[in-house]
Length: 256
Image (cartoon, rainbow, N blue to C red; front, side, top):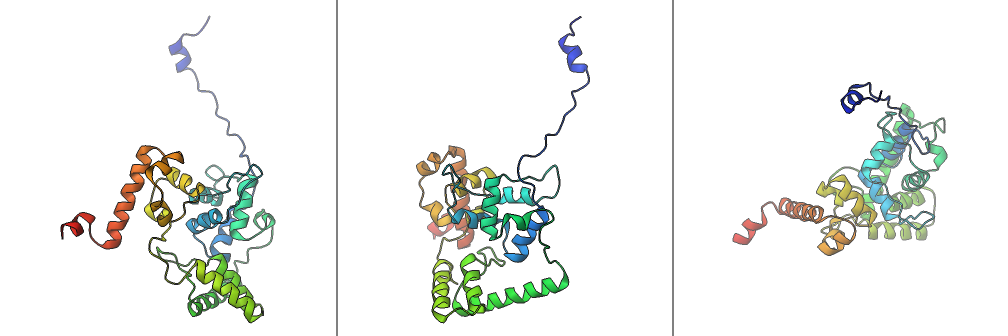
C-alpha cells in the first residue's frame, strides 16, 4: 500500500552524509602562521595584496581571495574549514610569497619556538626603523602593522649586501607605492564594513580603495553585478565614512 503524504512526512528522516571536501589539503595553522608571523599581514591586507598582483588562471579569470575565504581556509575545524582549490592555493602562495610545500601538512616546521619569535621580532623592528628612515608606510590606515611587499624587498636588499644603486631603486619604488603619508581617499574598501558578497564583487573587479570606488558611477557598479540595493548601501556607507572622517555630518557643515 502506498503511504500517504502525512505518513511520508512523519517517517524517519533520511540520514545526511557529509561529502568530503573538494580541494587541496593544506595545514590551516601554517597558513595563519605564515600570514601573521612571516608576513605580518591581516586577512584584509592579504586579500588586497592578492588582488593587486593581477593574477589570472588558465581561463584568464582573475585570481582573488576575500578575507572571509581566507578565514575559512585558516579554520582548523573540519566542518567549518575549507580545503582550497588549486587556483586558490596559487593565489594564497603568491600573496604569502611561499611555496605550496610550505603549507602542506608535515612540511617545514613553522619555528614557533621562543628563539624563532625573538628572531622575527628583531627582523620586524629593523624593518620598521628602515621604513621610518626612508619615508615608507608600514602601517594600515585603520592602525596596526602592515609590512608591504615593496618594503620587504627593499629591506632584504639593504640587509643582504646589495649595491647602493639597487637599494635606492627598491626604496624609491616602495616609497612611490606606499608613501609614509598616504594620499587622501586611499583607505581600503574593507574599511566601509560592507556585506561580504559586496566585498567579493569589488575586490574581484580590482576596486581595492575608497578612492577607486569614488571614481565609479552607480551604473559602473551595477554592470559588475551589484543590485540597486547593494549600490545604495555602498553610497550610504561612503557618506557615513566621510562624515566620520570630518567629525560632523555633511548637513551640519552645509548649514554652517
